[in-house]
Length: 474
Image (cartoon, rainbow, N blue to C red; front, side, top):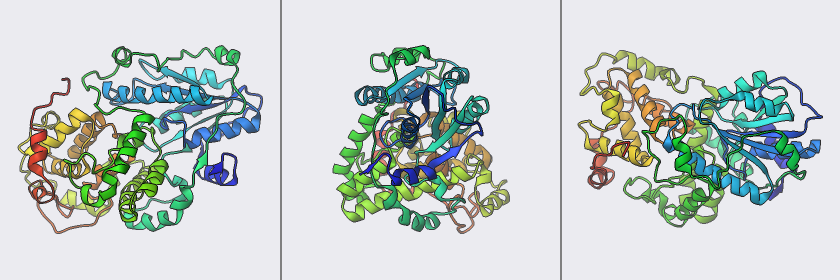
C-alpha cells in the first residue's frame, strides 16, 4: 500500500488536478480548505488527499467544509435523505479519524458568500471535480470571486480523466487503453488525517453555522427545507456503511455467477445495485474493483469490471469532453441525420410527460419499470434500456423524448444527474452505437422491442411484482 506522500500518489494527483482560477496561493493563510461537493467520503478521496498533503507542506491544518444545497435541480426528500444519511457516516468517520469536518444544511438558495468568507482565511481551496450536475458551474462561480487559488481534483473515475485528452467514441476504443492503466490506477493508497490539528479557537472563529448530522432527526430537518416534498425517500439507505454492506453482500452472492444472473431484473442480487453509491461518492469505484478482483472467479470479475470500468469511464470521458451531453447534439451525425429523416413518421402512441410519469401507458412492462423507479429510486439496467428506447417511439419528437427521459431519470433515480445516466439515455438515440437496418421512427437507430424481452427474462414475474399503482407521494 502506497503511503500518502509517495511518488505514486503525487503522480496520480498530477493527472487529477485542474486549476480553476489564476489567483496565487496565500502562504500565510490559517488553513487549507477542502470544499466537499460530490465525493462524499473520507477514504479514497483524491481531493482530500491533496488537501492533506498541501496542509503538511504549508504546516497548516485542513478544514473539510461540506454544504447540502436546497436549490439544486430536482432536490427532494428522496435526494436529501440519501445525502444526509451519507453525511452522518462522514461525520462519524471524521470524529473517529481526526478530521475537522463542518457540515452546513442550506435550507434555501446556495450562498457562496459564506464560503467566500471562510476562504478569506485559507491558503487555498481544494474541491471536487465532476463533469455533470451543478458542481462545475458552482465551482466556476466561486472561483471567479475567491480570494485565493482554487483547484478541482478528480476522484470520480478509476483512471484520471486527463489520461484521455480527447473524447472516445465507443467502448472498443477506450477498452484497450483502460486495460493498460487499470492495474496501476487500482494500487491502494494509505490515507491519513492531517498531521496539524485545527485548534478549537480557530474553528470557532470561522463562525460556521454547522449542523449536527449525527444527532439530527433527518425527516424533521428535511421537512424544513425548500425542496420538492412530493418525491418520498427511497428504501435504499445512503452512506458509506450501507454501500460497503451492499458491496460485501453482492461479492458473496450475485458476483459469483454474475454473467448468468446479471440480465434477470427479478434477481435482486444478480447485479450490484451500487450505482447510487458511486454517483453520490459514498463509495469509490476503485474500492469496488479491488473487492471484485479479490473475491470473484476471474471470468465473473472481468465481466463485471467491463461494465463498471469500461462503460463508466467511457461515460465520464464523454461528459468531460462534450458540454452538450444532455442534448441530441451529442449523438453521432448519422443518428442526427436519421432522426431528421424520420421526424414526421407516424408514432404508435404519443404520451405527454404526465402520462409517462404516472406509468399509464399501454405497455405493462414499461409501466412496471416506471413504477419501480417511482417507488425505489432504481431500475434494473435490462429494463432501463427498454424504458428509454420505448419513449423514443412514444413522443412527438426525438427532442421531447430526450427531455422526458432526462426529467424522469433525474427526478426519481438516485443515480440520476450522473455521467452514466446521460450516456445510457443517449445510447437510446445512437450514442456509442452504429447504424442498423432502417425502420419507421427508429430510422437506423438500434431498435428494441418490449415484446421480445419475454425471451430474455421473466417479464410476467417482473410485471406482477410492480402491478400495483404506485403513487409518488404515498
